[in-house]
Length: 114
Image 1 (cartoon, rainbow, N blue to C red):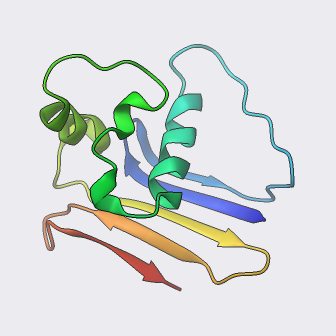
Image 2: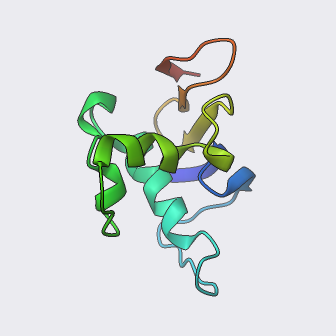
Protein backbone atom coordinates (compact mmCIF):
# COMPACT_ATOMS: atom_id res chain seq x y z
CA UNK A 1 0.00 0.00 0.00
CA UNK A 2 1.22 3.48 -0.87
CA UNK A 3 2.03 5.49 2.29
CA UNK A 4 3.38 8.75 0.86
CA UNK A 5 4.11 10.47 -2.42
CA UNK A 6 6.62 13.25 -3.08
CA UNK A 7 6.50 15.05 -6.45
CA UNK A 8 9.16 17.60 -7.47
CA UNK A 9 9.22 19.71 -10.68
CA UNK A 10 6.51 17.68 -12.38
CA UNK A 11 3.98 19.60 -14.48
CA UNK A 12 2.52 22.30 -12.21
CA UNK A 13 4.13 20.99 -9.01
CA UNK A 14 7.33 22.62 -7.82
CA UNK A 15 7.26 20.52 -4.62
CA UNK A 16 4.29 18.48 -3.40
CA UNK A 17 4.41 16.00 -0.52
CA UNK A 18 1.37 13.90 0.36
CA UNK A 19 1.75 11.96 3.62
CA UNK A 20 -0.49 9.58 5.51
CA UNK A 21 -2.09 7.97 2.47
CA UNK A 22 -4.58 5.21 3.28
CA UNK A 23 -6.06 2.27 1.41
CA UNK A 24 -8.62 4.60 -0.26
CA UNK A 25 -7.85 8.28 -0.94
CA UNK A 26 -10.03 10.97 -2.49
CA UNK A 27 -8.53 13.80 -4.53
CA UNK A 28 -10.80 16.84 -4.82
CA UNK A 29 -10.39 20.42 -5.95
CA UNK A 30 -11.32 23.09 -8.46
CA UNK A 31 -10.61 22.66 -12.17
CA UNK A 32 -6.98 23.03 -13.24
CA UNK A 33 -5.49 22.59 -9.73
CA UNK A 34 -3.45 19.40 -10.27
CA UNK A 35 -5.76 16.48 -9.50
CA UNK A 36 -4.98 14.77 -12.80
CA UNK A 37 -1.30 15.69 -12.41
CA UNK A 38 -1.12 13.60 -9.22
CA UNK A 39 -2.60 10.63 -11.10
CA UNK A 40 -0.18 11.19 -14.00
CA UNK A 41 2.77 11.25 -11.58
CA UNK A 42 1.60 7.94 -10.11
CA UNK A 43 1.19 6.45 -13.60
CA UNK A 44 4.73 7.55 -14.51
CA UNK A 45 6.14 6.19 -11.25
CA UNK A 46 4.35 2.85 -11.39
CA UNK A 47 4.71 2.16 -15.13
CA UNK A 48 6.76 -0.94 -15.86
CA UNK A 49 9.22 0.74 -18.20
CA UNK A 50 9.94 4.42 -18.67
CA UNK A 51 10.47 4.00 -22.40
CA UNK A 52 6.86 2.80 -22.80
CA UNK A 53 5.45 6.03 -21.39
CA UNK A 54 5.41 7.92 -24.69
CA UNK A 55 1.62 7.93 -24.58
CA UNK A 56 1.45 9.00 -20.92
CA UNK A 57 -0.02 12.47 -21.63
CA UNK A 58 -2.99 10.74 -23.30
CA UNK A 59 -3.84 8.41 -20.41
CA UNK A 60 -6.12 10.92 -18.67
CA UNK A 61 -6.62 13.61 -21.31
CA UNK A 62 -6.44 14.15 -25.05
CA UNK A 63 -3.30 15.92 -26.29
CA UNK A 64 -3.06 17.05 -29.92
CA UNK A 65 -0.06 17.67 -32.13
CA UNK A 66 3.30 15.92 -32.04
CA UNK A 67 3.06 13.61 -29.01
CA UNK A 68 6.86 13.39 -28.56
CA UNK A 69 7.29 17.18 -28.47
CA UNK A 70 4.22 17.59 -26.26
CA UNK A 71 5.43 14.90 -23.85
CA UNK A 72 8.69 16.68 -23.08
CA UNK A 73 7.04 20.10 -22.88
CA UNK A 74 4.31 18.63 -20.71
CA UNK A 75 6.36 16.81 -18.10
CA UNK A 76 8.75 19.43 -16.68
CA UNK A 77 7.82 22.25 -14.30
CA UNK A 78 7.66 25.50 -16.30
CA UNK A 79 8.28 23.31 -19.39
CA UNK A 80 11.98 23.53 -18.62
CA UNK A 81 13.96 20.24 -18.83
CA UNK A 82 16.62 21.76 -16.54
CA UNK A 83 14.06 21.30 -13.74
CA UNK A 84 14.73 17.69 -12.71
CA UNK A 85 11.51 15.74 -12.21
CA UNK A 86 11.52 13.48 -9.14
CA UNK A 87 8.66 11.29 -8.07
CA UNK A 88 9.22 9.32 -4.86
CA UNK A 89 6.90 6.84 -3.17
CA UNK A 90 6.99 5.06 0.16
CA UNK A 91 5.08 1.84 0.67
CA UNK A 92 4.00 -0.39 3.57
CA UNK A 93 5.64 -3.66 2.60
CA UNK A 94 8.23 -2.84 -0.08
CA UNK A 95 11.21 -0.51 -0.25
CA UNK A 96 10.67 3.13 -1.17
CA UNK A 97 11.79 4.12 -4.66
CA UNK A 98 11.92 7.15 -6.89
CA UNK A 99 12.24 8.00 -10.55
CA UNK A 100 13.91 11.07 -11.97
CA UNK A 101 14.06 12.67 -15.37
CA UNK A 102 16.10 15.56 -16.76
CA UNK A 103 18.02 18.13 -14.83
CA UNK A 104 21.07 20.27 -15.59
CA UNK A 105 23.65 17.96 -14.00
CA UNK A 106 22.30 14.75 -15.57
CA UNK A 107 19.80 15.11 -18.44
CA UNK A 108 18.81 11.41 -18.58
CA UNK A 109 16.54 9.57 -16.24
CA UNK A 110 16.50 6.64 -13.87
CA UNK A 111 14.96 4.65 -11.07
CA UNK A 112 16.46 4.44 -7.59
CA UNK A 113 15.51 2.02 -4.81
CA UNK A 114 15.83 3.78 -1.48
